[in-house]
Image (tube, rainbow over all chains, first blue to last red; front, side, top):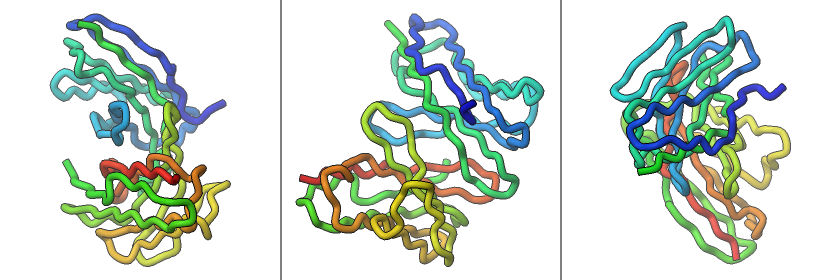
Length: 112
Length: 114
């Protein structure tokens, strides 16, 4: 089983819709969870991070964490064509260190 | 958010050349810096982790004599690709982190070896 799994996509949604991106992880000792956005040819950009079970909202983005199910998701409300990118889920396993394990990413396509 | 500066952004050079890439954290002291490589349409691959003042830890399959990493201060790490060959052409990205805080990435260096 891969450590961090994401559906590669592409996930296609129309403009204005909610995009739901999902990620599962295998290590129950994982401490913190991150979502990065990567445009083609660019480096990853931090979107959200979450440490505790539940929801965390920041503007149009909501991260959801369920440690019991080892599941983290990212919701993007009112999706815009500019949201079209690859979204990387990353998990930090070790307390006190910032080493991340990345999923392979989900490509999101938002059509006008 | 935190700013990580990576330089140069693009390098084109002949086979056999050594290339140095710099990574600086501009507004925080990074206890750890990371070097990744990404081939087209592939995911990020961690190459090595470096902590200030100590030797870098390389991932399995990454040649430490080929990819020299120096982390001389809390704000600067360098990656030198020695005697680069066409198969080393890739997108190299650094990131900086501190404890449990999120990693912040530089803009990346696109390396093309002719």
